[in-house]
Length: 263
Image (tube, rainbow, N blue to C red; front, top):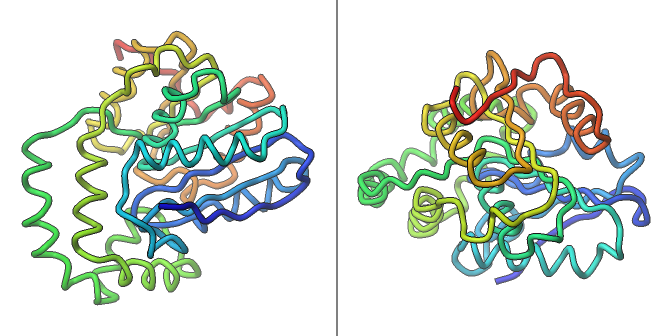
């Protein structure tokens, strides 16, 4: 299993690594890369079984995290390291911070779930087998794309990639995603960690944020009003402002509503 990645910007500048969510690939970060490549060394990764890594081995959050750690260690050269994840990519980021607690200086964990569901896990295979034929139809793909705030311009690429993935690979990815819990060692991660969740996201996402807050003292959490599962693509300017302020130790935008473990 390998990683396909692309580099942008100044290779001597601080490093920002972007990890996409499930069902998309590194193109989801195009608005962030265009903004940050002027002053940073940006790296986008296609996770196994996604995008340019479709022919790779089966997806494993832990194995993917190890590969991402190895990539960063190869190219970082003692620079400031920022890693930004979304959904499945956020789970990979949390695993990375558990494997190498001292590696990442700033982590931004967007829309992550850390509450495993045995019922959901057992239901994945029959649900995928039933819905898989529908993924070949544009009308169905457009319904899915709308939930992720994928634009009309991005849709053709999204549609092509969804048609590539096999049912077995999708089942494996979803099982990894729905089995994920806060990894052992995450409490020792010493980077500055920001958690974001959309106000309109599912309850499991908000509960997951509260769980994570109790497990690492370096975590800060915010809720974004009027947004569901897809902040980087839905509100790219706000996402860019959040990233820039966080990694430069500046106050977060007014749109960010502070959260704590209680509420």
